[in-house]
Image (cartoon, rainbow, N blue to C red; front, side, top):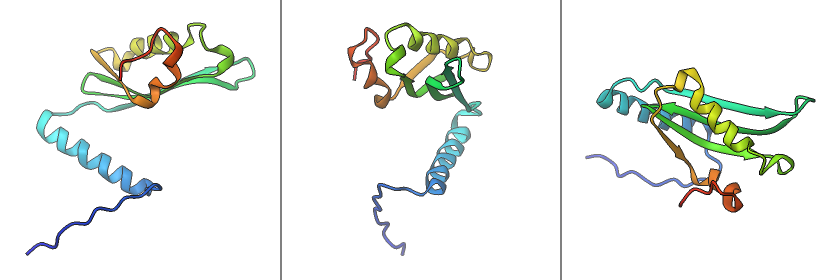
Length: 120
């Protein structure tokens, strides 16, 4: 007889545990849907001093662009740089087959006052 599983809740998960879960999910999906061509994506905005002023962090998988983080420094917000990052992501050659995009909730918080606010 199998021992029952226990639920382990942690606010500080070990990176190896997170990576294990991700790899298991990717393997499951590949077995059922074929290769998804997973690719991480990072696009940055930098000032003349090479300091980060914004960025888009995400990935592509099975013709989806997943945007986990989209951030613009207050100084540059409202000037079209968020749109420019999204355009750059959509034009990047390795994701040209992407037909859909998904923004996580943490991406939407900054856009609360903008015209690009995503519906929750």
